[in-house]
Image (cartoon, rainbow, N blue to C red; front, side):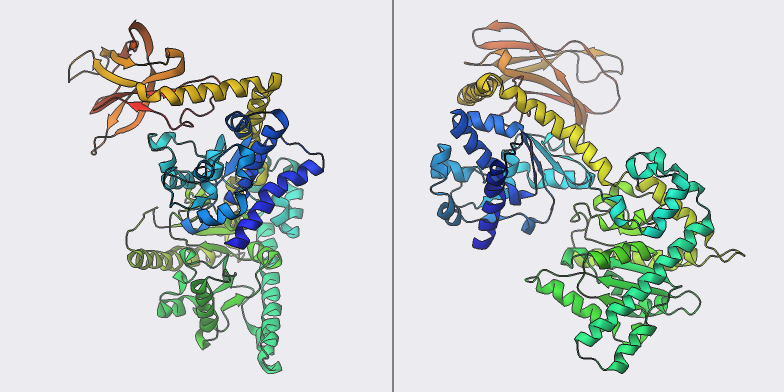
Length: 610
């Protein structure tokens, strides 16, 4: 932990100071994972020092230019530090922010008043950024569930965490052989328009024979590479020359090849395919339709379970029935990764849903026409279509892990035995797997323009970087006057929020209404020292589920009609009943300011009593 916090101080605070020393003054900073979160504090400190702002004013300005991406749904992947460790390194730093010890530590806590709670880097980044995102559509839902406690009054659907699905850099991962083929049939335009679906339409014109022969060459090179690496591994372990020579006969350049390469962690379940040795023996050693598996990856040095899984695979690969068709390649690196994603036929990924935030190895494989076989998790949850790959299960989640493993391993074997292996070996008179190659072409056409860095960076720029840049510039004009006003307003609203409440709500019409009927809703709202300009009062109306909760309610603004002392009457315009079924409504009030990027940022909300 001590080494970790020093690394993150160097990365976040040192990073900002290094840029300053180089004369680089970014208005927008993207914190990619919580390790960089101290950057936000340093930017606030510099604004206070340079512009004479107090903490709240500097926070309002700096937060406008912060984008934060959270990557991991695994709790252990988010860094926590003890209060004592934070105090050791920051006791001379927080006075520069004008903060006391408890106020500083509260920035990294879900519950600001809990003096025993550890300081979380992800919490710090979420609190100090206007734009927060996960790295896939499913990961957005998981992240909202994980960090909902930071905005306890907000419905899950409105929590300020969106998503930008990851992508990979096409030219770094597509094989040279396939690149030449794409140049011939798509033209060089695909290189500069990687994220344009039209640029990939030409994949459908690549002749089946040419695409298949290109892929076969890559598989042959993967087999040759694997044999060479295995010989090196045997020599490193002191094996005899006779044993080393045996490496030249492992794997079959013509056999269906499955690839599994990633960090070995328990939730990624690398042993799922090996769970039934008898069934696996029949699958791999069919003389007419052989199958082989290449594993690669590393475990964290302190992850004993991950290292044990590698040992189990290595042991299994030495058994006679698997000696030639299960290989584990050691020292996983970019070189190994390229050979594998370019040369296997099927890319296997079977994490325990929903713990795979995104995953990118399957995207790299898809760029090369490799078909994915995966749990519906991470990127594959939004990418999967029956014509471009295979899904293990239908997105179910289980309470019992043993039950989950049993069901999904059986489903994995079924897919291989009944669909994947037969399709691969279904050959026409020209000895080509036409239906398999058609899937390859469709997968490339569908996936390549979507899951690449061109699309990803463009999305970040349009949705986050440019709006953040514009908001930051707006708040910092004329000596940071807008940021100062926003900070003053936030302090005033927070100070007086205890005096506001929704006192009564009533709707026109009865308990039963018909589609097309009109209704209005009125609310008596006590504002105390605040004004209608300070708040947004909204009608929330929608269908009601079995738990009595509103499902995806429509938000309808209510207008202040008249005042009786500090109590205001709010009313909606006439609203039509659009759908049949059980409906419900409520009224809520949130802070409102033209420069407040996120209405939930202050942690303030009032809901009508049920």
